[in-house]
Length: 396
Image (cartoon, rainbow, N blue to C red; front, side, top):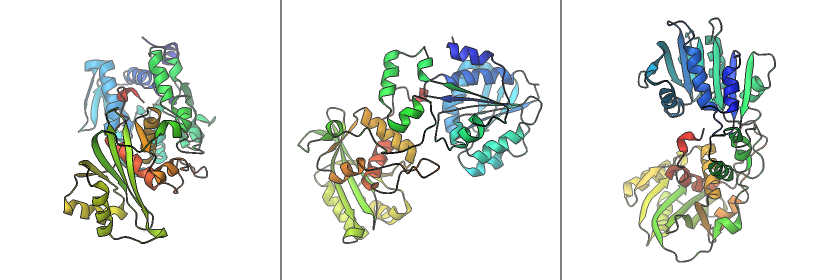
């Protein structure tokens, strides 16, 4: 069964470039893959086709598994060989996570292509792909959640009246098959720029505070003796900039508490050595059984991380330092009340209240100020995947 919006788009005439954009869970991936598969079957058996994701892993998760469910035995694929067969036609797979990816598709002659998460695909790759769609009546299909209004998808495709394109916005409220309670929960989990993009489906500038949903009444707790089930430490390392250790404890209520902080800025006082920082870490962690130390993997932290491994007092792992995805995870964790900050962590609280977007940048970038403790928060939330929802595979 299809929503009325999906049915209308499925039966409409296609342009050369066909883009579905809008909110999460709006049904754009499902209907675009269905239409793409049907279109591939219309081309000669010897025609060649392409499916693209930011990485092969995201392509499989977002598209290949769903396409297999839709088409069944008429779709076969090998991710390791980066090829498949769709209604007997050859389909290639590619990941395009940086500017060098465009070299992967030079020389191809394609009848169709499908791009997942187009705003995350480099523009050079997109332009090269258009040149590969060179046979008569070749088509491009793509889906994306919105990004900055300065992203090429908005400026060069959606707002460009000189090209043969059809761009259709899908919203979560148009997906009538979703449970209304689930829709309400999803809406409550996004805030600020993420709400505008992923719920309203609009291309908007990231401006103002990064975490406008940080609320003293909801997210700051009294420093008190409470039972913690397990402990972690996250670290943002600095020499002249601040070196931060955050102790995280999982409460019996299922909330992760930032129990206490270590915050030393070498520029404002004594610049410490690796040995001194490590001695401070041992003192900071005393009386707590630390399950894992989440280490900063920036180049400046290399010597400290080597020292950490050599000493062997902590089990450690590299942090996941994906900035925008991590910021979104922290915002979601705040909305779900999954994390709280003890009131003794004065620097962490201060940074939450000051950390801002750089509105003068063409891409989404926070201002590199008031971001040391806040980065350690992001490393913890993102690395442990504490916000990963039950419906994670559907949030696209």
